[in-house]
Length: 222
Image 1 (cartoon, one colour):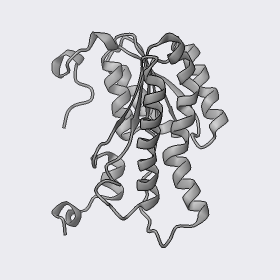
Image 2 (cartoon, rainbow, N blue to C red; image 1 turned 90 degrees about the vertical axis):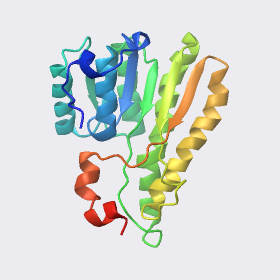
Image 3 (cartoon, rainbow, N blue to C red; image 1 turned 180 degrees about the vertical axis):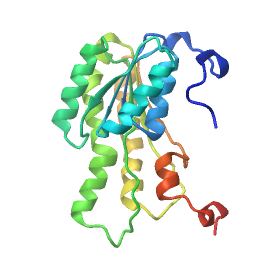
Image 4 (spheres, rainbow, N blue to C red; image 1 turned 30 degrees about the vertical axis):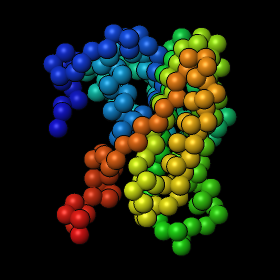
């Protein structure tokens, strides 16, 4: 496994276009989101990230500080289920980072459940956790991207609904909606040079996944 504290020039390509670029990542305190934060920091970007977990965020900030970065990232404590609070935090980040030119919508939760167990309340929770805040984060940052005719919105989706995994239907359905957001807004924003894309990762061996879901039986496909 790659050492996250390795010197920048030892293992990583450098992309000059990312230096000093302002980036905002949702769910950036741990897992995939923390990896995204750290990689942009290594490129010399100005990074802000939102999360509800202060402890994990502190660890991410510590790892980034060890990289002797060009810009130390900023953490914004926010519950992404609270849309007004999320938009307030992102508006502050726009000011702190001198604009946001890259938005990475990453925050999600893949707790296991069955379709039989689904209640209206849990359905709403799965949509709110895995889809709703994506749209409203875009709504917050898009006006200044469109005005500048410069921006990139990256929505982290999931291959789960494509490969028909059946142990978290609410999550998979919400993630299919992420692609719907991307396809709809890519056409709308593209004329003003703002790109909207979805990245569909498969299973990623984060600490959460290894602790909660990994098993030797699952690894063996049994």
